[in-house]
Image (tube, rainbow, N blue to C red; front, side, top):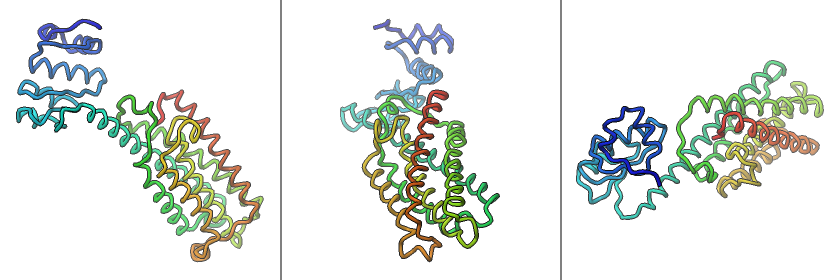
Length: 313
């Protein structure tokens, strides 16, 4: 069980010694307000996210210093004023539920940011490559707007997605550097398969002139939208999607609707006004092959990324 450390014993320790002691101690007893706050700060300095539960005047300093100060409705006023959370019932399970919900919300937020950042990075790179070598616009502005609109609507379900149990086991921190690293690692993968679709439309379907640019644009629109939408399921988990981890039903429904919308638009009554051309039947086996290759390569890169950096979301 370990030994119980008394408050006066901590007074003889400097900050580094207290930090080491706090990391291996389960119980501190007979501590005064200053010692409580110092122990909280020592745990924080050791990389811990600290919650403190208190209801008295002597707890106010520690409640303020803790990452999350928790008090009760019957506590003294200064304790309630110093706390971040005030429990209205004598039930600590609400804290567990709150922690899990908070971690889920944070995880879904990071998930959306990384999805969007990597997707936009890849799209910009693809447009730059296409513009350098193709003698016409690779996609009309109205098509890009429609593509982004459909994708963004599909992502409205992200807040209702579930997180893997492994992700919820410990608190996570905001990591801007990690988001940038993720973007430049995952983003270019989509560009590889965008360029593959460029070559397919150019050489296989002879969409290589201004007269046939609508066919080229329609082919890339469908591939771009479907890859953006489906890759969400690759990014949302460090596991194998659909097999080891499945998205929540709102995300699944929105994914299906986005895919069906992308496939329908080139054949819809809106096609001519948006600049689309109906795609030939031979296009779809190529599309399936590109999407499968995209998902496979992303899974391999994901496995390497997790091994290399020890994290995914």
